[in-house]
Length: 220
Picture 1: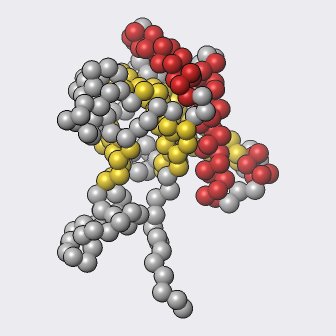
Picture 2: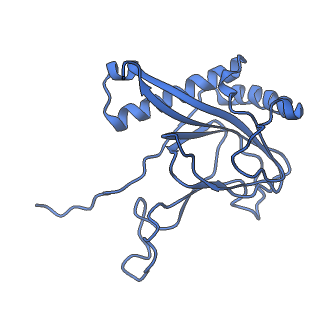
Picture 3: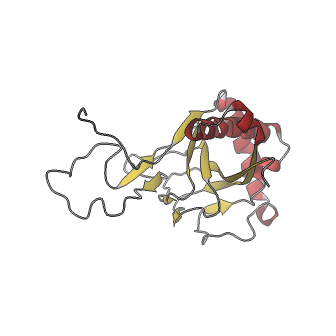
């Protein structure tokens, strides 16, 4: 057989960009900041993670809001997620019609000093983060507000020498950072550990997140 290098254990990511994002994001930003200002009415009453100072987390029913900008984003997210699932699982069009989606959806507003600790999302198969506004990143803080994923190959860097110190993606060690752009959607497996690095902008970092799990309509 011919020589070959291949990724035996790799982690699938997907990304897409919302069409007409500038217009829709302006509407989303105004809506989410207004809802944040109402305080406890829209805040998550039982957060699973310790809430850090400078971070507002909403309740988990965001995509149930009837506002047009929310429903436009919902349609975009579910369409991209459906394409990803179909591609990776090899589902037919008929199987996709049977697919049922269940979800938690929420938003974060992060201000200076705010961050989210490393975590996973148990009891879900796919998670996603959509960027409404990444906030301004200070020049001396290049990792401000970065969404950071941790390599699940926990023993891959136990021994480093000239034979493996400079492995390129997707075989590299360490972390994978997402420097968000407005309108960018990132999808990833829910089991993958991730965190949000401290944000040091003078404005707000605004993101929308979701966890999803699925069934087939006629499964018993």
